[in-house]
Image (cartoon, rainbow, N blue to C red; front, side, top):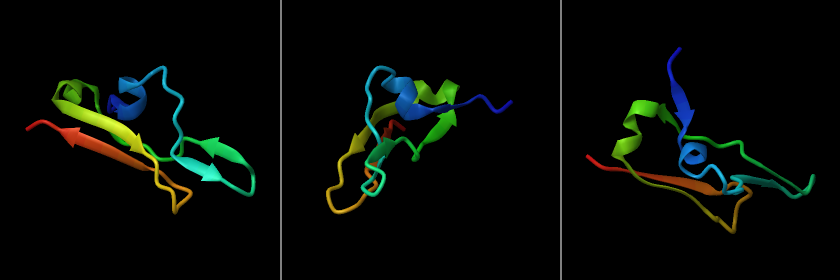
Length: 66
């Protein structure tokens, strides 16, 4: 009803990047998301996952044009 989308997956539908790694399970997952309304996609500049070595969570970076 709110027309929310996963911004990263919408902008990068074919890229298999993950935001979380479980060393005990040895699995990757997409558990972190940035949601937004689909009509605002034209205002987005960059959405990327940044590898963060000292944590099991990677960062998601979103830049928006004003």
